[in-house]
Structure formats: structure tokens, C-alpha cells
Length: 350
Image (cartoon, rainbow, N blue to C red; front, side):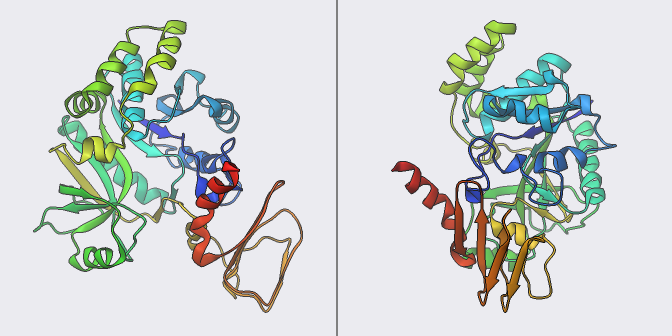
């Protein structure tokens, strides 16, 4: 059986104040009418039925998930009492799903990524499931062929001598590498054996748990104790013990240590939508490179991004990001818009 796990617990701080702790970016409509989590579920249509799709999220966001995904069964919402990064989040979900359905093949997907070519995405996912069916102990990840020296993504290096085929190849992973500086990113691009790490994994639930037991034994033992219980006892034990698991990403906690990892090079218009620059890359621009709504008017202005409910007028300005909410109006240069997260933290400290 093939299932999907959508991770929807992030805070999207680089999109503050449009994205807030109460309603982070995965629940916002950054592209069109659908929210990011709705787009994530929609791209699984025809591939995985809704009853086999699970969402893991914080308790704060359960009502948002229910409102935005009314067709999702309530019991398919997995509650994470506190954010402890992706490794324990995935292991918790694997325990939960295995208890309900037994061993299944599980595609793990972030809720806040963009995919432009759904057909190619599904083709890659089908290939991954087929590979796992024949190699139960393997881990498959989808790697994105880079088209620029990107410093905001981690990379996957596949073994030398392999030739990329965007539709068919399943390549052995040599190693996962951290986000590089610009010079190293340029080197990765020129070498041609590196792919962007999209954070999309396909593996069997038993494989997830075995790898957690091997590389994160404390987390495994805590989760095993939690899942001795059910109903209210399970929820109480989860709240009491989950904060003690390792706070670590799946890349650091498992992928950098596991041996049996493969990657499918993919080209389906992927972006992790980590900043307003990501939104700009994938939004419709006017003839002057502006990304604006109908209520924005501009004169002699180029390359601006505006997200505002009010009538907004730009006059003789270039390369600005203007974000307006009920509480804040932010005006930033595009060059330094990534500092919004730091600004938020400084403001909220006061």
C-alpha cells in the first residue's frame, strides 16, 4: 500500500508578517486561490487516495488543517505536541501509520513546496514507489537538477559514473551536503553530480523505524513507549514525553548515516518557497517585472513585489517588497528581504 505524509508544522518566518505563528505559510494562498497545503494534496490526486494521506502538524494548526482539507479523515491528522524538527516528526508519524495500517510505503512531503509540473512529479513518485516495492529496505529521495548556484538549498551528491536521465534513473546517493556558500555552489553546478535536496523521501514505515532505532535510539525508545498506549492515555503520554526526543532534522539524524539511499533526478519545476524571492520566481510578472495585484498602481517602477489589501501606489521605485497586513506594513529592498526573520525576532523581544 502506498501512502503520503504531509509535514505541515513549520512557521514560515521569512514571510512574516504575512505568515504568522497562528497561520504560517503552508496555510496561505501565495500562488492563486489554493493554499500551499491544498496544492500539496491536489498534486497527489489520482495517485494516492485521500484516506491514505496523513498530515502531521502542531496542535495549534489542527483546525486549519480541517478547514482547508475537509475531505481528509480526522484520524489522518497526526498531532505533534511540540516542534522537534523533521526526524522525530517522521518517526512519530511512521509509528502512528504503522499502528493503523501496518507496513506501508510512505512518501514524505513538505506542505509548503511548489511543484509546477504535476505530471512529472507523479511520474517520479511512481518510480520511487516501484523501486521501494522491489527494495523494501531502501530509501529513495527526489533530487532536483540545479539550474543555478543556489545557496539556500542542501545538495545530494550521487555516485560518479552515473548519467542523469530525468525520467528513468535511480542513482545511488554518495552523500548529503549542507547549504553551501556561493563559490561551492558554483563548483557543485559545474561538476554535474549534485542535485538539490527537495526534502521528499519515499520509504517503507518499517525502514523508517529501523533507521530511527539505529541512528536515533533515544527518539525511537521514547516513541515506542508512547505507542504502548491508546486514546487519552496515548495523548497524555505523547504530551509528557515527546519533548524529550532528539531535536534534529532527518538529513542530519538519518540520511547522513544511512547506506541504502537512492535518488531520482527530477525536473518538475520545484521550489521550497522559502522567501519572497521564491514567490517572485514563480509568479506572473508584468512587462516591468512587477509582481502586484489589481489594487496596486505604479509609475516608473520596476521589479517590485506587492502583497497588499489596500490600494497601493508605487512611484519611481525599483526592487522593493511591500507587505501589508492588518497589523504591519513592511517595505524592504529585495536584496535584504531575507532579514525579515531577524527583524521579527527583534521586534517580538521588546
